[in-house]
Image (tube, rainbow, N blue to C red; front, side):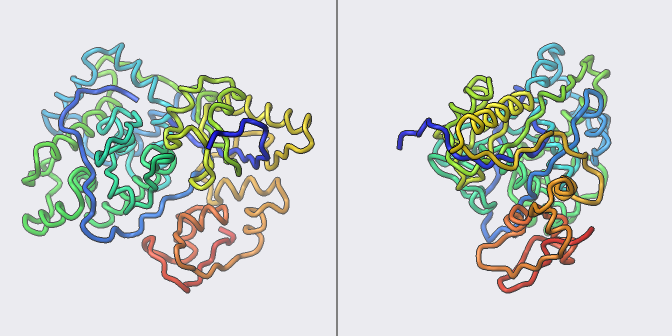
Length: 416
């Protein structure tokens, strides 16, 4: 169907997220193995607003969340780190290009309790590029196989592919990594499982035993590509940990370059968004690669990502259009896209609702609400519906994981 380019009614809400690509030496293409049995529910956490990332705190925060060993743990780590940085200027340019997406991934990792090293995982997988689907091949910057995507709850189709959707795929992957760690109690094995499949690594550990802390790269008899996958992840983390050791300067991210998510309630062509936001369509399409037909589809989130400066321009254009055309409805537009930062007990959505009386989040904060689980419900869906976080739902309902059952009564709002 040909897209309709006339103004459409919108419901726009600005959610500040952080976001960020970089060519690296190629080796065996990592694959995420399709599980051989039902994958536990790893419902993604909803995108939550984040405080502006300053030009100084991005890398400090990332280093502070590292959980694995340092650069000297294995000679192979240093070897790969030097390969990545053999041309310092090129490396710095690559890092500058990927930084908005990298920051988004880092924020998602933080929400899921996943160490900072895994915010760099797309570097190892795809250079942070949204690799297009090709038959039964891995796709997206996370290099997810079609069968695995479906088990993770990501839609795979000709008009929309969740593997290429930065927001959806990142949250699902981070939830999966968190699940792997809960299962193996070892982030190194979580990386092995991501590359080689959980069930294969589980069988290996049952046969060989859980690896000790040393050596840093477990001496399990895994494939060379699986071992290299972990080494490369540690290597790029090594560069971030000690950039001066490799004669590189890590770039900074200006506030107006951070990615902002706008949610709309109507089908909307990316071409129209690019025009009104004042940015190249190609650049907008790369950030929103999940919409393969160039149409923002509310059946799959209805969310568009773009740099803050362009989001501000788009918001102004939509507001001006609404004033000029009474039939054009624009609601729930935040007067200021900057929301309070993470770290407080209350979710940003609830804090923002303090200034919007009658909003769903404000009402939820005032009066606890109970939801009876129906068929098809997930914690992720409920979190988005009630404007809260998955972590809050787990805490309020004393859930150790993401599994819920039909008929279960869940508290979906409370005073934290």
